[in-house]
Amino acid sequence: MSLRLPEGLPAVAFLLRKPILALSGSDTVRSVITTLPPTRAVVDRFVAGEHTVDVIDAVVRLREQGLQVTLDHLGEYTEEKAQADATVAAYLELIDALVVANVAAGTELSVKLSAVGQSLRDGGHDYALASARTIADAAYAVGARLNLDMEDHTTVDSTLAILADLRRSHPDVAVAVQAMLFRSEDDLKTLAGPGSRVRLVKGAYDEPAEVAHKDPAEVDLAYVRGMKILMAGEGYPMIASHDPRMVAIAAQLAEDASRAPDTWEHQMLYGIRADEQHRLAALGRTVRVYVPYGTDWYGYFTRRLAERPANLLFFLRAMVSRN
Image (cartoon, rainbow, N blue to C red; front, side):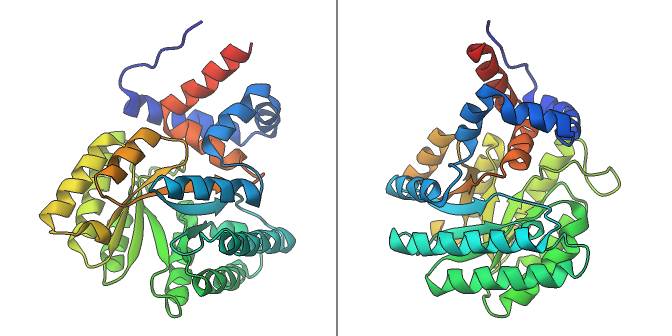
C-alpha cells in the first residue's frame, strides 16, 4: 500500500493541526500512540534518544558535520516541584556531560519554563526564574548558552519578564517568539536591540482566533514581517523555519541589511530536512539544529505531526509498513 502526500501541504497542515492536537490531549489516544510498535521508529527520527549519553552522541555527530546545536530536555507543564527540580538536574547533568565530551563551548540549551516551575499553582513564575537562573549560570560558566522556548500565549508575559531578569546577568540569553501571535510584532520590535538573540518560529500551539492568526497565508506574512524587523534591528536573528520560501527570504533580507554570515543563523529541527541543513552550512551559513531528547517526548512528537503533513504521512507509512 502506498500513501501519497496531497497537494497544498501548508493548507492541509492547518486543517489537520487542530484535530491532531485535540486528540493528542486524550489519555486514551496517548496510551495508544505511545504503545504502538511503529511509534518508536518514528520518534527516533525526531528525538535524539532518551538519555544524556544519547544526545551527547548526536551533538558530537552534528558538530563533526559542521552544524551547531541547541538541546532540549523534553518535558512541559509540570505542576510538581519535584518534577521541575528533576528537569533542572537533568540540564545540569547535560552540561557536565558536554564538558566531558569537549563540546560545551558554543552549544546552546533550550528550556521550556513550564518544565522548570512556571506551571506550578503557587509561585510558578518565581520558581521558574530561579530554575532558569541555575541552568543559565551553569551553562555560561562552561561556554554554553541558554534559550527560552515560548509556549502557549498565556505564558508569554511571564516568559518575557523572566528573560529580562536573566539578561541582567547573562545579556545574550535568547528567547523564541511565535509569529502567529498578534502581539509578536510589537514584542519583536522591543527585542530587536543590540546583542538581543531572538529565535523566530511560526508557532506550533493551537491558539484561539482572538490572539493568533489562523490562516496559513496570514501566518506566513506575519513571519516575513517578523524577519524584516529582526534583520533590520541590531540583534542576532535566529530564523527557525524549514519552509523553503522563508529560508530564501531570510537570506535576501540578510543581504539587503548587509549582514555578515556570523550575525544571524538558520535553525531547523532534528530529523527534518537534514540535506537542506548541510546545503546551507556548505554555503558558509550558521545552521543550528534543535535537538530534543528524553522520555517525555509525547507533546513534542504530536506537535511535529500536527505542523507538517509530511511528518504525519511518515508516521502512517511506518504503521502500514509494520502491519
